[in-house]
Structure formats: structure tokens, C-alpha cells
Amino acid sequence: MTVPDDRRDRLRAVDPADAEDVATLQRACFDDQWSAESVARLLTGPANLSLLAEQDGTIAGFLIGQCVVDTAEVLAVAVAANRRREGWGGSLMSGFEALAAASGAERVILDVAADNAPAIALYGARGYATAARRDRYYVTGRAHPVDALVMVKTLGKWTFYDS
Image 1 (cartoon, rainbow, N blue to C red):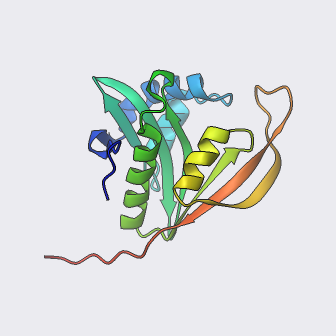
Image 2: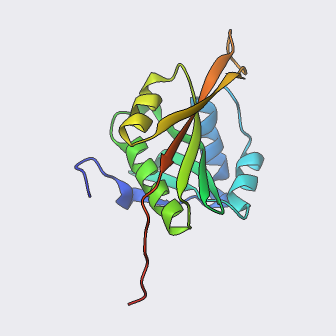
């Protein structure tokens, strides 16, 4: 189903050459700072499943994830501050879920800070449920540690046929 704010047509695989731009956006969005080298390592790993959102020649957001056997994991998803509330987060999640399902994943897991209400609302609206809580998980750059919610979504069963 396509929704009016679906922007999956503007998504592409993240290339290791994008590592510096992705790391710059990641540092702007999160307290835990990633280097371009660490992003490049994630992007060249065997389980990599990552997407980049672009609009008007600039990065609107990214999702770095991985898929191992039947479980896909969102490691980081970020949208540039000037592009938030435009549907990019949902489109990145939709694109990732489709790639994960095509890669054989039966579920997607992710961690989210318990105080990140917009992200929790986005994931909840997409069918993710809280499965666990990690006490005092986020500490870098914070005055007080924040718990992480582990959220899980079961993906629909897909059957692929050669035509």
C-alpha cells in the first residue's frame, strides 16, 4: 500500500562512499558519535542492510541496519532536522522492512531511548511492540542515563516466485 507521504522512490542503498555524510548526520542527531570509519565498516559488513534518503541532492535521512538469518536489526535511523515530520522516517522504515523480508527476515528489532516519544510513536504506529527494557542503556552525552526500549515487529510471510 502506498500512502501519500511515502517517499520510498527516493531511497537507495547506502554506499561506503557516503560514510562521511552519514556520520555527519548521525553526529547531529545522536549523543553517541560515530566516525566515518565506523560507518564504513558497518556498510561493508556481510549483514549490512542500509538505506539513504535523498531530496534535492542532499541527504534527508538514513537507516543503518543488518539482517542475520531470520532477524533484521535497525542499528540507527536518523532524519535531518529540516526534513523531520515529512514522512522520511516512515519511508526509511518501510523500505528497510521490505528489504529485510526479501532477505528472509521474519522480524525486525530495534532499540529506542525511552524518552524519545516521537520515535516510539512512529514505531508503534508501524506495528512495533515493546518486548523488553534495558535499564540505563543510554549514557553518553546525557545528564542522567536513559533506559532503552527493545521493540519488535513480526514481518508478514512473503512468497517469491520466479516469473
